[in-house]
Amino acid sequence: MQALVNLHFVMPEASNQLMALDPDRDWKRFGRSEPAWALQSAIFLARAGVEASLGSVPREDAINFVPASMLIGRRFGSERYYTVSLAADKVLIPWAHAHIVQNAEQAGFNRYWLHHWPQPGLIPRQTERACNVETVGFAGLPINSGLSESSLAPVCERLGLSFRLLSPDNWNDYSAVDVLVGLRDFSGGRYPRKPASKLFNAWLADTPFIGGMDSAYEQVGEPGGNYLQVTCFDQLARALESLASNAGLYQRLVTNGRVACEVCRREAIVESWMRVAEELEPDFLHWRRTALGARVARSLIRGARTRGQRLGYSGGRL
Image (cartoon, rainbow, N blue to C red; front, top):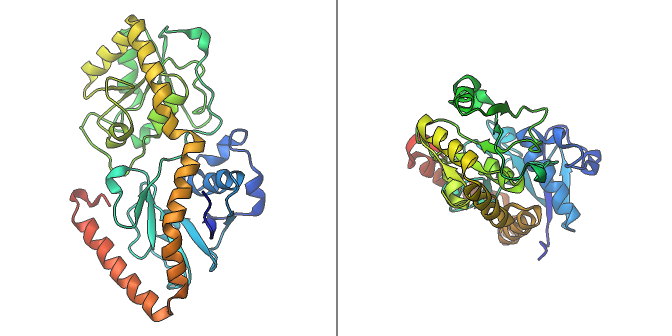
């Protein structure tokens, strides 16, 4: 499977030297959304033999994948470039030719759902910890969550467990994390722009995962099968207590997670990227053959359709 056209990834202050980075060695360089999406994708696709390049500006002869954060409020050349927005958790860019989204609820016309790359440089849980539960890790920044360390830590303390907040300095290290909690809040929110990254990282680390009602978790996982789903503090406490006292439950979640994580391994994500590139290729080639006036007309129609779709969803989730 090989796209015939060049795939060009754009991010601020990009250079060819960045393509020499090793995501597992240099994992701290991939913490922000732009390098996490654009730079990682360029590196892993190039490693797989795809004609993938990286730059700070788009190219006229390539399909350009550009973080939505760079596209908001601006246009790249008024149809001079074929632009695919790396949407992440931003709104869809009306004039983009296509969008890469990280949640299945956003997939649709010219919107392609791809799994986010898992945490680079991930250190899995130590096998000698067996099914013992001593440390509960919280993934993500509290500032982005409705919950806080002060609200979660007491739940662990009542059960005699230690609580650890995975910070940007060590959020790749699951070696001493016995259970990973990836809750945003207890509102029942579905978070249709968010990915399943926290669940993926737990699976790859051989660490049981406790999450909320995020749609992304349900799209790839099975509540009660390969992760636990809770909606309140009491359920969280019961889930932690069950994992600490029931080695069978603990091992079942780990075993099922090992099976489920095949979808989020780099090789599988590379294949998904290549399938999307093959689907985009005919539209890109048609666009290149089209006169500028027709390109602009198509852009206006595409933009109106995208805006209409955004208005059609409650909360403007697109």
